[in-house]
Image (tube, rainbow, N blue to C red; front, side, top):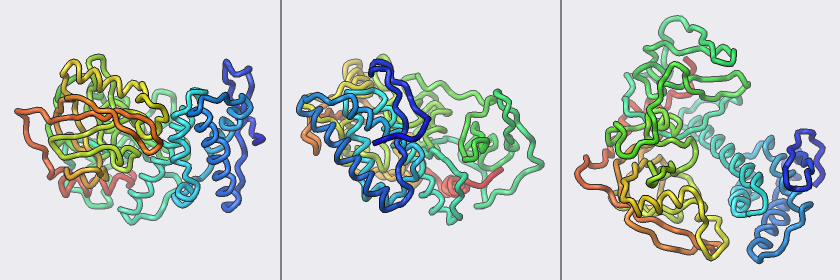
Length: 383
């Protein structure tokens, strides 16, 4: 795989070689073929060699790096992802110990494809035409119900420019805006299109609640958030993508995510939850992977420190009802222990048993409310 792009990266410790991005073909048929070959002949071969403890040549690893760099600008449609099985390929890459940048690039691509899939799903739900400028990293939560909102919220008063710290001018929503105003489900976030794509940034004038606190952290059971970024602002769950918030005495919080690779492993009965450690689906070894998230849950077992549990829409693997959109806070759970199981690759993974703590309000399955669902459908309308 020869790279023609100058957007290369230097990797210290690998012969100081510059690896340039591979230029993938524009033709859809040729692209599908090349991606399939890349997954089978590079990623899977590297995984097999790793499993068999065989050496992998630096040039072979460079080709994987070049392919991953090139994928950053490839338009991966749902059909292309399905036909090439590239999601599974990225999961395999994260199990390879050879180069840290492989894991970073694979994680970036998985997050990018996930955000694009969430964007398409939300656009389909609102029956709005596709907008190439949209780029929303959907995930859910907010305890403040919004005000009555039509699907196309009207602007309240003139829009005023808001200057960001690095000099770019953004428009700040009016305080009474039904979605982004003080009582809106997106309060604390600003829409940023300065890069030509839609993104969200935290309003510098908004003070987020600190997430690194054990216990309820001021949250009411049933608190609902439209996306994980909002859950972070409200103090429910710190990471913007990861499902486990790591702390010194155990995990602060975990998210039971819909559409995740862990759905075949986790089982959710409401008051009892079986939650798999990080990397469960891609581990090839006979011993569970040592990850920060898994180690945090082990510390939760040792200390008895309760963990906040949030459930996201679309999550399966059990009978407990999940929110129809966004993400909901369902209270504190004790991590009572774990068992070792085997995944589809023959590798070991650790699954933790979480039991809902006593003396707290029951799970509020009514959230999100009908009005919150309407507000969620209106996220893409500008203010």
